Length: 317
Ligand code: CO
Ligand code: CO
Image 1 (cartoon, rainbow, N blue to C red):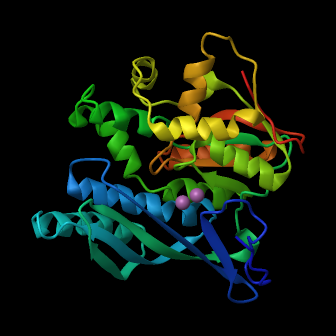
Image 2: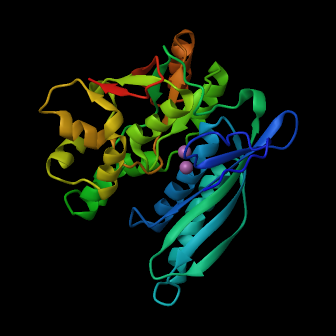
Image 3: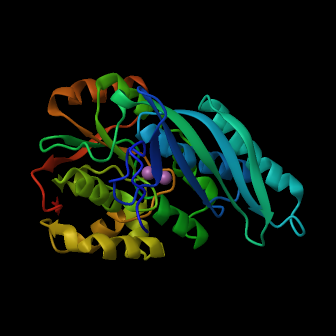
């Protein structure tokens, strides 16, 4: 696609951005993003909550405040009860309300396969903008939610695990990244991306490319949902994980043991639904950032660090 070169389009140089930043005054910019997908849980209310938490995530990753949201819903009104659609929308409504934003409308279409998501607009103070291009050598990489939603959802669909057994996973997907974002703003964190469909490795790759740096990850330090390793060993792997891995593999330098390599890489390439934030934090700010996350009852695990670029390599041990 040809690029727009409007000077107010602040992240026009960023690679593969899923959200845009547009300057509206000397001090402020709009953050706009959209995401929607097919149901990943059977419970319609929970699906609505997860879709909304996921759609709001890019605004939080940039240090913005969500203002308004528009519903996007595809639903088979001719063969499914309308209450299901209403319940999905109610889940989204409640999550947007929790975020302090407002649902201002939306659009629906008849579709045999249900889909739901939102377009979200937020406001960000330009001097406090957090971007994917601000990572510096020496920064520590902090992840705020465990990995493995794609693998666990695949296992639920494959009837290897019952949906009610994975409350922790569905509850985490429905959790806003608001607290993690507030901790970043409080501690002056400058670089972050949210982890969604492009996986930990994909989104990290994107951050490294935009920042002209490399990174080191320690696989054993990455928080995982329970049973993720077991499900991977049983082949419960979403197709998207293979596609993500194919894409980033030329940039990976594996230094761990040969027998854990395949499973570890697949887990790190697992597409996440409403995943956590991956922040690059200056060493001088790490103590206060981890303390701030803890106060906000939010996970914060140091999983690696940023190293000198510009070769955009991810070294994993
Ligand atoms: Co997104
Ligand atoms: Co994103």
